Length: 203
Image (cartoon, rainbow, N blue to C red; front, side):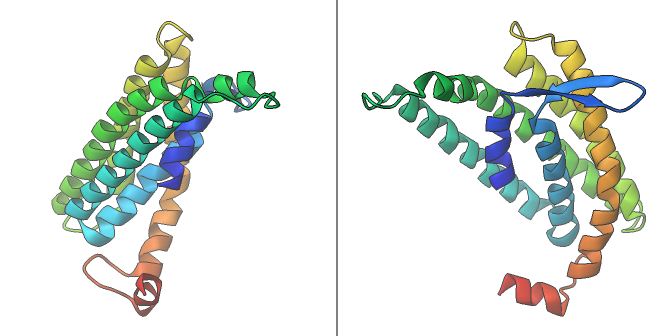
């Protein structure tokens, strides 16, 4: 929930990624949201698609809460000695549009990831964890990038370079995430089981 909420604030800044052979541009949220796909896959692996969709809905309501309170704070009158209203509006003023884009992109892409992950798990009979982690996240991340960037920045920034940059960075993070997927299974045990450590964590 923390990652999802903060990502909507961080998205107001566009950053440059220099990979040596080329430069890519993407909203700062790209690194944060990439991790949410890993967390979605971990929950899906351990607890199933139903619990994953439940988590997605909770994250959705967290974003609705953020847009509501951001609007209320922006509309309140600042104290006479408060001198940072312009900076405050620069950061939070774009939050409503970003969150609307995020709500749509997040809900659609995360559910695609959850369905693909479960389908690949059934197809491989629970084998090849790396495969379902990678091939469920990559298309979901691409769809997320198209929807989010188009809705959030169309008419404000060049969307094609942002979609390209965000997709590539997300895919790279997705590959880096694979060892952490195996680490989560080592800590929590295989799906359908609960290791002693995971019992302690739950407690």
